[in-house]
Image (cartoon, rainbow, N blue to C red; front, side, top):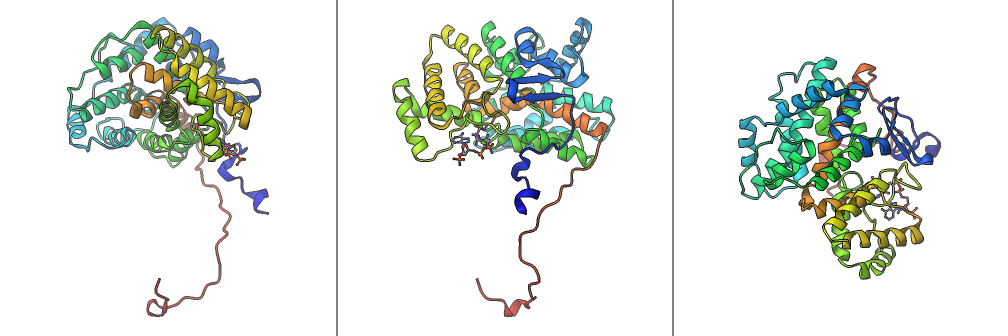
Length: 378
Ligand SMILES: CC(C)(COP(=O)(O)OP(=O)(O)OC[C@H]1O[C@@H](n2cnc3c(N)ncnc32)[C@H](O)[C@@H]1OP(=O)(O)O)[C@@H](O)C(=O)NCCC(=O)NCCS
């Protein structure tokens, strides 16, 4: 009976409708508002994709310019928030600082309690613009170095690298990071997006929904997988060790982060793009070691377990080549996915119904009450 009613992890359950994104596992396709991801990633910028997700259409030139200008005008953090960041412990996980800072950021937003679609779009843009500033500022503070202010001449991807490192990034790096932002921007009812929609369904605010989503994203079964995948690659260290490492990990029944997916069962449609651009970057940097290790690990896991890599397995080495610290990989994912979360919160609120499923009680019933003095000591 339990099996027929309860779907653990809501596997196979359609929990709502959306016109934002479709995952088509059987065709190996991912669709953002009607456009194939591969088409978008090769042809447009992350800013255009962000506009598409929030405004339901690709922007024309003047719409894009004004969207871009607005995003740039929102990048700076309230100075008092920077002071708060300086007072936080510097050793904690970057995702926890990001989550705490996002909650505080809400208190500085003049639209916080305005739940109109217009105000929610403004809040979405502020969050999109400011998460990268938060991530880089918190990192530099944790390293005891000066925070670098956003550069209004640079796009979302280039500005992230600039604020992280303090110098102008190279063109290929910016293009590759921009593509990873596009790949990570949206993925329908994944755990963090679903969390955001559940929070939004109570008519709570957009910042609350994004804070909940950040908590869900941190987990290694979800966004945290990209950091864990890099740790695996570093543990392997050399292509010659890769096959033996995988066979041993499988023997020990280790879960290898960056492999498997709840929806995709043959191929993750984002992997091909991450691989292609990762290879270009590796060749330019004259460092194909990580790419070679990835290829061997992929082949062995496919052969032994019939499992395939997900996008996190191939973005990890790509970030590593850019010199991005590993603890920032999941926050970086959030700097892109925040646009998907926001689009879902807005969509949820337009046709809202509170999420309140049932649970099947499997505990005891009819127990007799005993006064405190008569209960057995533990
Ligand atoms: C993403 C994930 C949670 C989806 O899992 P799911 O659909 O619930 O599948 P299950 O966890 O039930 O796993 C099904 C089987 O595949 C195995 N499996 C799935 N992912 C695996 C992995 N990464 N490494 C080793 N085995 C894995 C499980 O052990 C299980 O095997 P069994 O049937 O022999 O016990 C899972 O694949 C995983 O943990 N991957 C690693 C984390 C990750 O990369 N997350 C990012 C996703 S984009």
